[in-house]
Image (tube, rainbow, N blue to C red; front, side, top):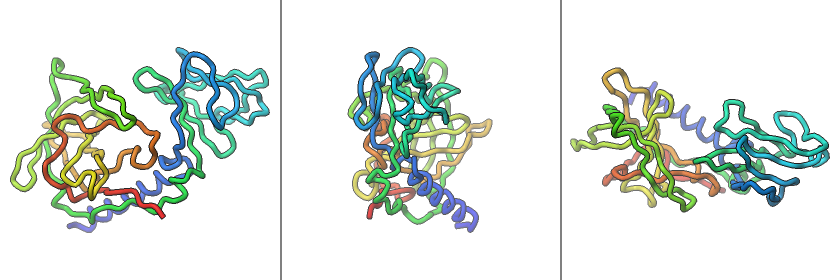
Length: 263
C-alpha cells in the first residue's frame, strides 16, 4: 500500500461524509413530490405547485417567504422553476429549506431538503473497509456498438421499474477469475451499479462504483475501495437504480463503503 494511494482514499472518504452531511446534502432530503398539470398543495409548503412543459411552477405570495435564485416570489404569485436537467436550473428556498425541481424520465418533481432532517441530525459517519490496494484492479472498457447501445429496465429503490442507460462493459480479474460489469458513461468517466456477496449483510444492499476515463485502448482502473453508497442509503426519497443483470458478483467485495452510521 503506497502512502499516496491510502491518503487519497482517506481524503475521498472524508469528503464523502462531509458532502452527504452538509446542510442541504443527501441526508437532508425529506421529500420528493411528483407533480401533475393541476395546481396542488405540497404538505409543509405554502402555495400551489404544478408541472408544465417548461418546468415546475408555484403560485404563492411574496409574503410566503419563497425565494427563487435569491429573489422573493412576486406579489401576483406565479414563478417558474427550471429543473435540474436545464442548463439554467433554478433552486428555491423557504427559510432553511432548499427546494429543488428535478426531471426524471420526463416527469417533474420538487425535492425538499431540510437541515433539521432526522437522518442528518443523527448521522454518525459512513462505515467502510480499510483501504486495501489489492482491490484496485486493472480493467478494460469495451463500448457497445451503436446497434448494441441499450437502456436496461431495472427496478428502482422507490419500487418502480425504469430504464438504465448502459454503454459498455469493463472486464477485470479478481483472485484469478475473469469478470465483467455493465457500465454507463458519466461524462468522461464510467459508472456502474453493483452488488456482491456482502450486499444486504455487511454492506448496503447495492453500491455505486465510478471508474476513471479509459484511455484510447480502453484501459482504466476498477477501484473497489471507492465503491460507495447510493443516495437512497441516506434518504428514502431518492430514486436509485438496482444493479442491472450481470452486475451481482458472487464473491464478497470487502472494500469501499459499508453502511450509514447513526447516533
